[in-house]
Image: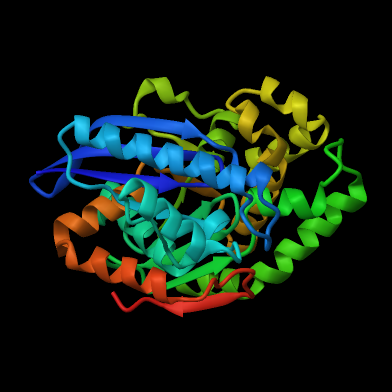
Length: 335
């Protein structure tokens, strides 16, 4: 069985085509289209017509590519940048009408659950009680669990792009006062979630997302060209030093540092501060940088639970009101 998934994120639209063999999604083709929606959309405001056009084109291209590779219709979802827009439903219906792809948005807690599943399958049962951190453009997802799916999840409005808009709007080297204000806000919103993680006492910590992958590279992890099976760790002490390196440079020069790409250079500092603060408050000294995340989680749910689960999620996406901006939310997973 050949499947495909389309992930509309804050910066790119990503396609994964995979074969399901022995319960494992084996990628046969990947592609991406860079949109940089986070640069065109102000948090809490409508997605402008030009950005919608770009989104429609990218999803259409991704769907056509999946068909060329022999995959079924893609499971397509959008994360915070679309989920938080007041014209979210209009955007979803426009994409469906013009491409035939039933793009949906996922609640932050569902994102965390799916990402946890991908990380759990990659890390295996020997990792024991597992805590997951995932930084996106608009939100931070946290999950903890002992089994296949998490025992609790939290979705917080602490995405790297969102915080960059809020705390570093001038695009210059940040002042010490700006950094202090950012850290204070992050600590306030993470306090309860971090306390829960410390109380649970995870055996293994895992970080996912492009933000964490790039920060891991900046902190000394091996480059992506060495393949997904290379062991990569992110140490909190190294991440603290990385915050200082990033804060000393204007955004347009951060891409000169190892691992930091030009499209993500501006938001890399906010991502580093979120990552370091989350690890410190949760008592995590080291985390594994995991190559599997939400896209693999979606594929695994299809393999393990069948298509009915995704159909339900898609329908709920149509029916629900846009949930962002959000306060602190902690949800116990229904597994």
